[in-house]
Amino acid sequence: MEDQKIAEFRGQLRGELITAQDPHYDTARKVYNAMIDRKPALIARCNDAADVVTALRFGRENKLRVSIRGGGHNAAGLGVCDDGLVLDLSPIRYVHVDAASRTVRVGGGTTWGDVDHATHAYGLAVPSGIISTTGVGGLTLGGGLGHLTRRYGLTIDNLLSADVVLADGRMVVASADENPDLFWAIRGGGGNFGVVTSFLFQAHPVHTVCAGPMLWELDQAADIMKWYREFIVSAPQDVSGFFAFMTVPPGPPFPEPLHMKKMCGIVWCCTGSMDQANQILEPLRSYRRPAFEFFVPMPFPMLQSMFDGLYPAGLQWYWKADFVKELGDQAIDLHVRHGSRLPTLFSTMHLYPINGAAHRAASGDTPWQYRDATWSSVIVGVDPDPANRENITKWARDYWEALHPFGAGGAYINFMMDEGVDRIRATYGENYNRLAAVKSRYDPTNFFNVNQNIAPA
Ligand SMILES: Cc1cc2nc3c(=O)[nH]c(=O)nc-3n(C[C@H](O)[C@H](O)[C@H](O)COP(=O)(O)OP(=O)(O)OC[C@H]3O[C@@H](n4cnc5c(N)ncnc54)[C@H](O)[C@@H]3O)c2cc1C
Image (cartoon, rainbow, N blue to C red; front, top):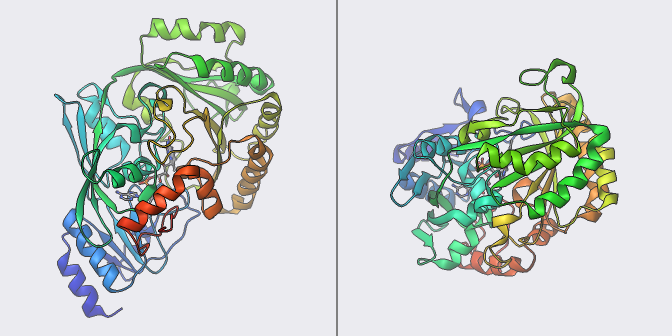
């Protein structure tokens, strides 16, 4: 591309424009998953919605592939593209809390750690994910599940409105009252419909939670899973817990004899008092006493960033996922078999409950079709060493192939790598055609296609 054109584009932006000639190009193109190594032609750091409009126009006029980068966490690296233009929203980073209405206005490039930090000061929280460095943009547009899902629903269930820049450069609001079809589509349909520069969320009173992991030896894993599958479907909504196979990290708070041991666990989050939480979990403690537990009252942001240190940016990640309605004995046996073979310290399997308040919405209320699922399972092979790439990928694939026949069909869109159109269709099910119709209204040329793509109808 001509230097003149690039210079003009640079002059029109408030934010920085980065090319391959810039010394920090390699840092700017990196995303969270080190398996992704894409080389965009240009990275436009957008300072505001006006920069987004300018960058989209430049992309359109020069027929460039365009990707939208929020927090850069996407498993498949959908925030970056080869040879095209990356709209890096990270400078659009702010959180404004309105304590009176308990609403939170969040910039399109903000991370969840920023949101938790700002809302905690008001004794409020917005339901999100379990790692604080994840972007608000991608997580929200895909659905958003985490510790508060059973209590207050998915992140999309708490989205009130969004400011969206469309493919043709128009700036619109999507809410129940304005462009309601677009509002429906962005609550699960990903970055297919436009660039969200600002989100407005409903927050909830959450301050100190009783939370943390309980761990058991692997020979108790089947019993724990059987207890958990009964418990979590009828537990009070202020209790959440996800089941995990994990390797115990070699450091505090874990006792030395457990370091590097493969174990199973449940990571709890109870929004009630410690007395209530202990009463609810007492039957579990007396059924199978945990080998270790770190279940204490803690500020909500502490829980939200508990795993950040274990999972810094720059590790190799390979993801496989499914929605799960029932967890039968045969599936549990297979889980224990594959979960016992975790290939590396960082690799894990999580079963996130998506029942409770997440079941209040019906399948067609948002694009999130699997409102009747009980769990979202995710198997992640993770390691810092690129030489282990094959090893972690094979383990995750083998595990998934064994369990997939027991799944509900689709998978949480934000837990998938690039798995093709059939998997995307399976995930949206009956909502797919409606999404395609909305896509044809707001992005008829499929300009936004670096995503879990929904082709225009
Ligand atoms: C360590 C880790 C833990 C995770 N834990 C959870 C969890 O607990 N719960 C959960 O629900 N998910 C979780 N996820 C998955 C996460 O939701 C997805 O990876 C999500 O895509 C990340 O969003 P991002 O903005 O950081 O990603 P990016 O890579 O920046 O963007 C991903 C895609 O989102 C779209 N996008 C992002 N921002 C915008 C925007 N402002 N406007 C329009 N489109 C946009 C784009 O299409 C882009 O291609 C986790 C991911 C990781 C890596």
